[in-house]
Length: 311
Image (cartoon, rainbow, N blue to C red):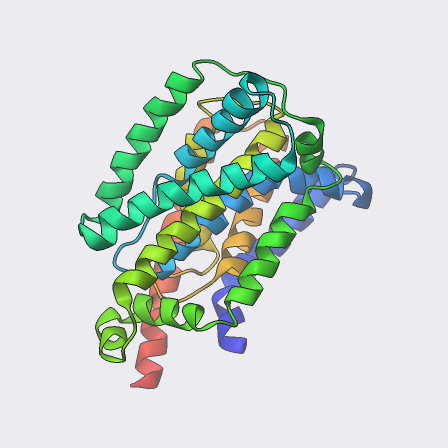
């Protein structure tokens, strides 16, 4: 347990500093009565970070850069195709449709990366471009509104989808699949020798990433209250930075969704703080890049130190 939370130490330290700074700069915004709204604002980034994590944990360079475009396509399909064009407003249809669409895209990425054995970043780059064009074809310009129940998930009910994801991940961590996922990410040859179905585990990690990206797309739709074909892609690289900041090793096999969520909250608080100072978006990009580099270096040093202590 202490080793696990040791990986989160850097992210937790930044979280405390940024939270104090935000409270000093804008205490009203962070009053308890506004926590639901704040969580709704942060939810798409947290969701994107959670979605990016399973394939990274699976190792072999499994970085899925199509997570953002999946969010954008899900938003476009749910609002334009299902809600406005087809008149379907039930959450019992729209939520499963979003999750199934995300899982199907994840399965395609998984097939390309694990069966065809295309380099993951190349396979998901192709998906990134395909989904971007498809989303613009379906929805050339922003359109709305979203159903009222969905918009409520950016306010008082913002905790619900993230809470469900947390509960499902908690349950998954108590199944053999989680141990197999971490084993494959740490050393796939040793895992294969031990009888772990390496290809299947990695494939399922891509499906899980797609499923969570579908959920993140619904969180994004709730936040903006409509569908915008250009917003989703903005989350791709920021989510990867959040995952690295949260102590998840980009080499695979170490970390988890809790760390990714903490990293995403850190970036959200950084955005909030810099916005309060009227800092330009260009400076935000510099901040994201710096965070990513520093986090990756610290994790690499930590992993190296751990290997020496076991030697």
